[in-house]
Image 1 (tube, rainbow over the protein chains, first blue to last red):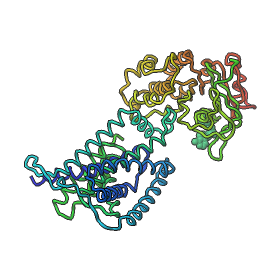
Image 2 (image 1 turned 180 degrees about the vertical axis):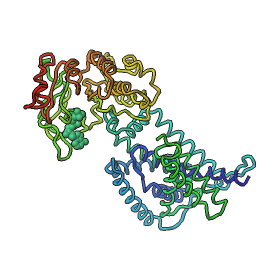
Image 3 (image 1 turned 90 degrees about the horizontal axis):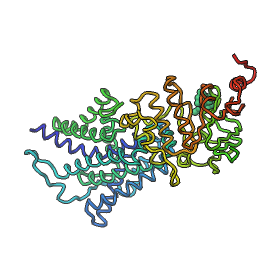
Image 4 (image 1 turned 120 degrees about the horizontal axis):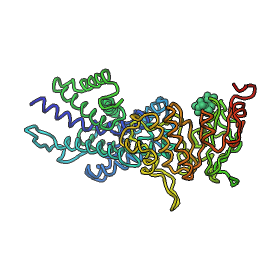
Length: 285
Length: 245
Ligand SMILES: Nc1ncnc2c1ncn2[C@@H]1O[C@H](COP(=O)(O)OP(=O)(O)OP(=O)(O)O)[C@@H](O)[C@H]1O
Ligand SMILES: [Mg+2]
């Protein structure tokens, strides 16, 4: 029972990693951009949310409603203002650009919010739990995982069935051929990054409600998102979800073996997948 | 065909970095005609088509299409002006189904005036029945000829006034080439002009009203396909100093 419990807690933790990973996978899949500032954007949005909650006394639901459009706007501006100039065959310019952005964001956040750790008061949701087949499961992790599943499905459906989704997949497969079909690839890129950062607006609220955030936390969040994406398969949306869950399970099972091992086992599983199936579990290639 | 041309390039120069591939080219396509563009490897045929659709930047000169200067329009805006390219090597969207490949283009097609029959998925599936049968399959599963049909269909469904075809026979079996070339008169009769790049000179002159030859980035021969002699073509194709073998 102890291990079943560990796996279930791991799946629930993985829901949050999945939320980070969806946007990263989308950006990589469409533009071959690995956004080094991904984790810093989560932290930035979380700190904005915490401040809004403190100043206006808003609950987490309202904060999500505010952070999603803010995230979309940040993503759109980021792509139009910086990344559209850096995207291309060579991955180095975009790596350098997002690395620079990551440093700038960390400094900006330290200036505005100082080095303090903060968190978001999500009320009784944080402590509530339910019994599933005699395993105690927190309501908040359950909600996080459910939201991750919904977001993955929704994005999958948008990509599969809408005009925007077809244009985006076409631009990912062959940029010039997509242009010939009338696809404005720069606009599609801006919309993709807007979606990726908008999803981080949701993840940021859950992260801040579940635990604490500080301006320098971005790096760890980036690593988890990155590992989830690699495990699942670069560019695959369902891969990002599955990769997030696997990483979560590895960390929780690891920490049950020895409390200090959780993160380490997560990294080991990532390395194992990288060695055994470098294209990722759900990748077609 | 004494009206103004549908597409007109004037003193068009284009290239890549330091390399100039087209030298002050003057070139016309009139509504409803089929023009074949021939020339040796590296003559600049693909560069010319790509400069029309904005995939290669124009260095000097102008391109007007249907009376509008298109030389400074963004490439993605040209499909909805009525200019479509079937690119060399087909360039389909791998991982996407036949129908999704077509729909990417259909989603952003030129709006037609009322009463003008449009290219629809149904009409394309009538023209190429095998595509209808395989509409749900990923394009990379199709044979080369079938993939070429998807590439042509994808260009047609943008509702072009002028269809640019870059070596649509490349790498295909003669029977399949025949099948695909048999569609060109159907497309022409629907009112779409065609500019055809073709390596096979016999096929090129048989399928066109007019023929033009590029040599090292310059137009060296132009005339009615029925009137140009093979000797003149061979001379233009290889440049002066070469004899017909
Ligand atoms: N992307 C590129 N970068 C640099 N040079 C190029 C590029 N594409 C083509 N060229 C050069 O431009 C010239 C014209 O090439 P282009 O592809 O237009 O020839 P083509 O007539 O289509 O030949 P082919 O029959 O082989 O397709 C060639 O000398 C070629 O080497
Ligand atoms: Mg060519």
